[in-house]
Image 1 (tube, rainbow, N blue to C red):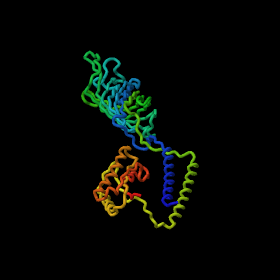
Image 2: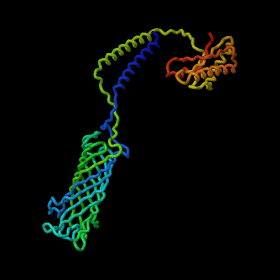
Image 3: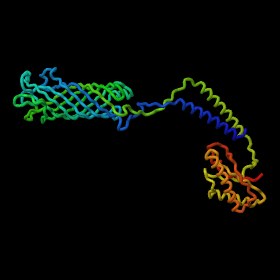
Length: 407
């Protein structure tokens, strides 16, 4: 066996084994979204929501504790718009309404009742309506502690926030008749914290139980003197949330490469391939140790001129080569030569390749004649095959004109 053949056979076998392994590996690999592999961030327009909630408020203040607990409940409501910036962090902004019931030491205090039944244990009942803007920063504890999981039904979300309230109280005329709630000059600041228990009904709709504690700054009497100090309101809300646009989170895509159930067949094929490669290596070593024949028989063309793809015009370098060939031909006027035009069959149409072969061969002929070669010495032809026939990766060797002595 010739050395070149042995080397080519060994390379082909090795490439075949590698290609088979790559093909089988490619068939086994699957790709899945894995939220645990990295930070999840969506587009700005995604993960927005709106929440409407209603519930009850229970007011706790230094004077108010003397009032019956059952008589300190008032309605409360909120509406929010918000966005989740990641599966863990989000924010919301909205308007909150709180009803507050307490006690004061006299009728001159803000929110004091008038008329029969307005006093309790020597103190006067008070009633306020607080409404104003609020905002919260939210942390999804479930996603933080347990990891993000698409389709999870329950989520626990803690939040802290702040806001400001405008105070509305009931006003009375000179006859002691109520004129309804009106705005006073008293504004309250609030700091708040709570826990939202969310139950996802679908991708876009959820219901929630919001448990909250709000610290309130002091209310004052008409003279500007603080009397209720700071108060605390405990609230519970039933909420309804609608989520806009994309609601889940895009996770990094990672490859999953499962192990084959049984590798015995693959191991047997690999062992056979290893044995075949070892045999080829032994043959190659034996072949390389043989003496090299020194006699070289040159049956190749006198010269080969190569062209870029789609080109039939001779480059400057090739013109110098053809002129050198012309000199050899003029020194041998009795010899005839065959100029064969070639084009690769992997690119271009048949018509284009036929024209390229013809133009390339005729271009070389014209330059030879211009440099003193007799037209009678030259035979111009074309070949519609591939010059090298080494495959598509070697097409550059097929775009040429060969110059041979006529047989």
